[in-house]
Amino acid sequence: MREKLKLLFLSLLKIVLFPHIVLFLLSLNRKLIEEDLKVMNQKFNKQMPMITSLVYFLWKNVYYRNIFYSRIGVLSNICSWYLKGDKTFFPCKNLGGGIYPAHPYATILNAKKIGRNFSCRQCTTLGNKADGEGGLGPTIGDNVYVGANVCIVGDIKIGNNVVIGAGCVVTKDVPDNAVVVGNPGRILRFQTEKFDL
Image 1 (cartoon, rainbow, N blue to C red):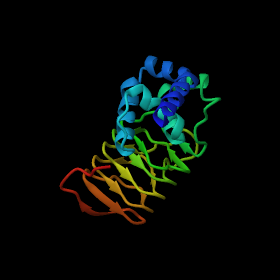
Image 2 (tube, rainbow, N blue to C red):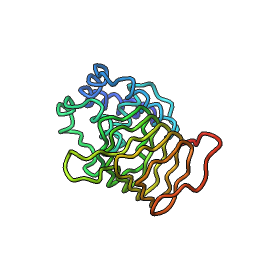
Image 3 (tube, one colour):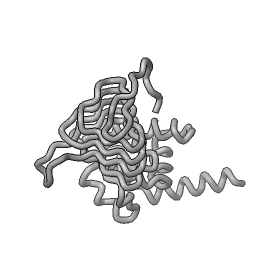
Image 4 (cartoon, rainbow, N blue to C red):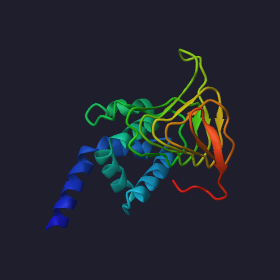
């Protein structure tokens, strides 16, 4: 009986979220959205088909919704009015696939570019040093994990496979495979193997 109710609820959700599904299927960023969903399924220990996964995370995860709306761009206005994203999480437009928003409350990702498999926690700020839109934000590599309360500011480059610990303030370039801690951020050590986000 419980399984039947779940299937019925999921079917109803697919009807409610039909505009989202259509936008996903027509999106130029469909591959990136699929990468995001694959990572979300891994993190939440789910094994669902792509459309079911999309519906599930759009319904259950307000932060994932923001990423999805960012991926589909201005067309998100078609459906974001009745299923809103989180007003405290602002992803940048140039995100690689496989992003994992691990409770990113009060997070602003104003970067030039963020690579694949990026993960961040609450109160993270990626931004520029100058006021207005003229300032340049950081460039973030692939497989980067950012802890809570981190500020990464300026026209700097964060390498691949980097871990930035909670409370860091990073204003200088960070090489590949580094573990960064402190304020100001300093390299604690280098990793010899890829960090699993």
